[in-house]
Image 1 (tube, one colour):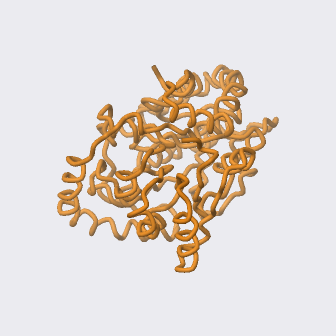
Image 2 (image 1 turned 90 degrees about the vertical axis):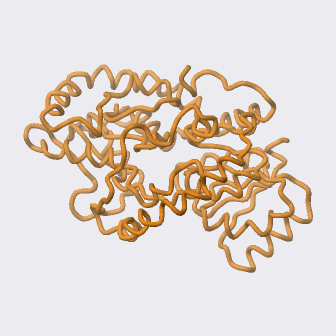
Image 3 (image 1 turned 60 degrees about the horizontal axis):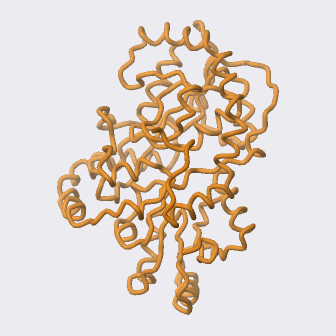
Length: 376
């Protein structure tokens, strides 16, 4: 199978700087791309006609759960597809079970599938969490959380059956890291205004469609660790630290260039992969912007992150314990920033979109994962 000969069916949600490099790299390879503009009957009918007239392999890229559900009737008999998973825990099991290849942006999906890790570590999200801002999806998810906990035991019964009947083929689980482009992380000299900045969302709510994740986590806040650390650091705003928190007060959407500017005005950026240890692009972006990270690392991915990170036990550290740690963090800023700058060029090369497409092809061809992407 050659990925350049496949038909890439992409979600309209793949806009923005995170996925733009992959789209551009596919164009350079003259790959065939189909944009699923919506799930209307007309749009689905055109796609059905396209894929059933050919035996080409289809790669479904970045589609939401509702979009995949809409596509299922097209592929139930045809099959011959693979699926690129972003938040894999949110994807319908029919597609992962029937896909030729499951392609994970987050390596934790492969680790969970192969029994090397659990979806969550020892820390659990709070039973209920109110959103910090009136974002519609966060409010709706929070309101649905009590009902989700009530029905979770019943929903877990078919999940157990699905896991028991799932044949895991490790060679068909592929790692496809998030890309980064130098143009999206320009190095600029900014006056330092903040000691600590929290830019990432503090609410991570999903429907757990994947059978390897308990239904008890439906609409649970998996970013509780990031929220807790941000809340603790905020206590020391002005006494004695300068703290910037995007989620305090009225939420305003910030263009990416403004996000970069604020991060580069900060000595440290708060960042975690959530309680589920996901390799979110912010780790890569912050380090390439020259700003070290305070938070928690990852068990499998980003081996370079440890030299650019001040580790904090986000779910267990107390405010009393945290203050001297923050002072220690600032004393290490110069060294950790130098580490960020030292690895920037190598990261831009490792996570170049064209190189990642070749990495994907090499795995399909049976070649081992090269060094630099995963911890040994």
